[in-house]
Image 1 (cartoon, rainbow, N blue to C red):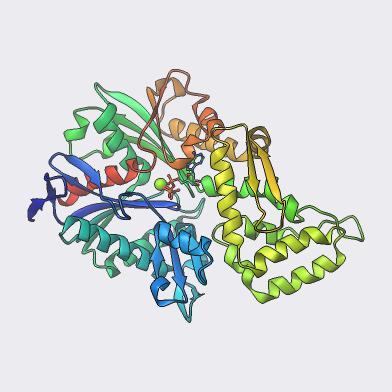
Image 2: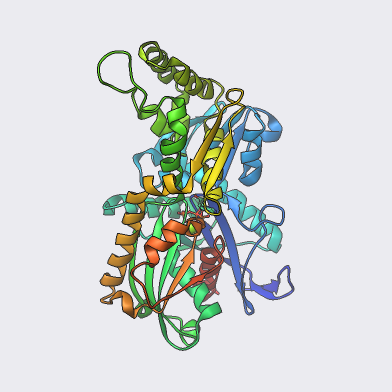
Length: 431
Ligand SMILES: Nc1ncnc2c1ncn2[C@@H]1O[C@H](COP(=O)(O)OP(=O)(O)OP(=O)(O)O)[C@@H](O)[C@H]1O
Ligand SMILES: [Mg+2]
């Protein structure tokens, strides 16, 4: 094991890193004697959007992160893929998909993305990385042990294929707990970590202490883990179906009978990992027939316009922006003149929150179950530590905090806590 000087002059262990491959954003961290730090992987940014773009032109043949999203938004011909992690644990992961002039497996796409992160990290460090602690959600998918094992195995195989000799895993909320402990804890405390991300929400009940930070074996301090495959992208879908899709014909009537237009296209247009399926020519042919029998064909025209111009991700990007705006404001106006002159969508926080009631309830139930699984009651919890982008939604925070009247709510680094904790773990395991 060699040591050299990192960017900030402090010694870093050269070969080990923590890698948080997130549904929406990814980070990579290393840990030296002075503590963990995340590496800048895209300009000055430490968090890279988990997005890839395969373009038709040589200069945009393969892009990741903000550049990938920008190429798509700028109308460069090619395919944008986001929410790749959501495909882990599903049957799709081993299937091939068309990206310009070739077909590759989704697992290979994840490999290309992670290989690029690794390479950029090694360039930033000026040192090779050959051991990694990868984060994983408590459950990639709900109630399916075999699928969860397969998801972890897939990630392990991908990590080995891109050159990591040592690969191990840590639950994402446990990693966040290690980072919080380093910053916030004096004396012995019981904390519940709530990591509310893009695709999954994870909870860990953990015993934290300044002494614990120095111990290697922490398994006995982790009192319970629980999670649910539900995160920000589900709230995107909810807001889309609630406020945006009606303007594209969702729930509008057909001419005959007491029926509505089919809902499947709206679901796909509202789901990051299935937008692309709408571009199959058969789907457009079906929509032409629906349009013929729809009582408000002008609405279906908007939908067809989005699909024909392959702007599905642009709609979802607009929905996500509106969702984020509603964390700070009571209403959000989204102009969609690029679809049709004068078109815009207004969403209110109250309407969005009411429509997302069932999602919040599932989060609240999972948090309570996690505490019960630790053999504790809500009164035993000293801190609720929030991390993950979706922890900024006021109604989500309130739902999770409700049972924990005694607990102090603390916000960590929303996009970095997991990656920093994984870096701490990498130093413990390999450093
Ligand atoms: N201010 C905000 N209000 C509401 N949601 C937000 C806000 N900022 C970011 N988000 C949402 O947070 C999510 C991304 O969070 P994060 O980066 O923690 O996820 P991730 O780690 O990639 O996902 P996961 O851990 O589930 O794999 C996105 O759905 C994004 O829309
Ligand atoms: Mg995360």
